[in-house]
Amino acid sequence: MTNSVSGTLIVGASQAGLQIASSLREFGDTDPIVLVGNEDVAPYQRPPLSKAYLTGKATAESLSFRSPDWYAGKGIELRLSTHIQHLELDGPSSGSGAAITSTGEKIPFGRLALAVGGSPRRLAIPGADLDGVCVLRDMTQADDLRRRLDAAFNVVVIGGGFIGLEAAAAARAAGKDVTVVDVADRLLGRAVAPEVSAFYLAAHRRRGTQVLLSAAIEAIEGNDQNRVTGVRLGDGTVLPADVVLVGVGLVANTDLAAGLGLEIDRGIVVDALARTSNPNIVAAGDCTTLPHPLTGEGRYRIESVQNAVAQAQIAAATLVGRPQGPAAVPWFWSDQADLKLQIAGLSNGYDHVVVRGEPDEEQFSVLYYAAGRLIAIDAINAPRDYMAVRKLLGTGGSIPAELAGDTNVPLRDLAAAVTV
Image 1 (cartoon, rainbow, N blue to C red):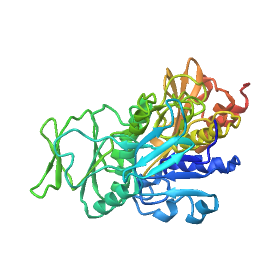
Image 2 (image 1 turned 135 degrees about the horizontal axis):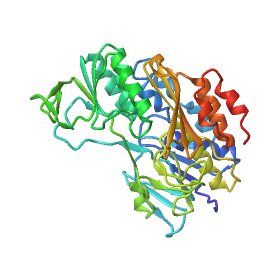
Image 3 (image 1 turned 90 degrees about the horizontal axis):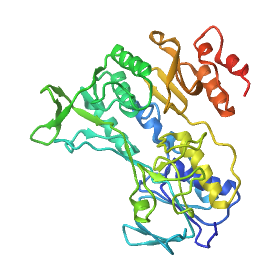
Image 4 (image 1 turned 120 degrees about the vertical axis):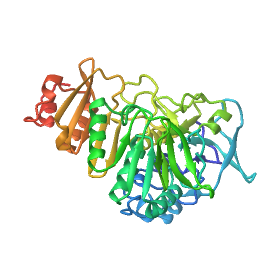
């Protein structure tokens, strides 16, 4: 790619956006960098918003990635509270051009990186816009939800995914009456095996959370002040609610990319080098659809810190023409009450699982296999299993399924015995 005196514009002051800027400097790039974000705060960690931040165990300051002096020291211009309305390229296949802000300002760029993340999916049902119906993606929304939870008695969480269950656990730990409602027939259905779904269903119920599955959600009800009072299900049941948290997934922000004519498939389509369908433009993070990091096959949406960081490093390397290193094993974690789930690998396409340990003891692992080969692990309060498999996947190794369930032998020993 050809550098320009106008430098690099990174749209999205996200984890991926900050990592692109940081990596450019680490790679020796000295061109100007402008990092633009919609929010009025500098880039910060998002995962704790539904965990430690919601429970008050983390502060806004503790979530910030860098001090203000760091940006100045690195020659990175951080533009906050700035909304990019659209992007203009110098030519159809060019990587240079200008960004137009909502105030009409033009920001020129010689190179462009998109790290625009995603937005919470909204419900298309009556009452979805009532006061007290919340989503959770950014710090402002987390502050609002935390304030509302402090005064609430009854909390309804719509959606049995990671965000919903993490927030439900936080609300329950604070003594609230919590109900989780999902239209699916199991929790975390798109992410984990039925064995893990069944465990989390039982675990949340043990901790006092009511969980309703295969439940049609008809409407959110409110009072004369347009404030939420309950959630009405398809069978006519009304669940009382002072706060409703909607956690039904993330929609990739693709408007800017679509405006440039880039290929979109549930996200901005990129290749293994983080290049979009215009190879002079890169993208990284939750906004992208990418090939499997290890096999290079298929198209995946990977919403995780690890992917945001790894893909951003690759994007920066692509911008400066730096050779690539080996791909990283995807990993993810979720804290729900005192349950720590650690995932390594991608379980898509698995045909067999091995349960290692006893789920009732709340310390076990589930290993995923495809055609006899280990492809992923879900470890609940079992960090040694997680680390052993994560390391093994990075070397291309496997563990025979018939041996993996033997808890008398540490997985690291089984992994060490495998010939790659």
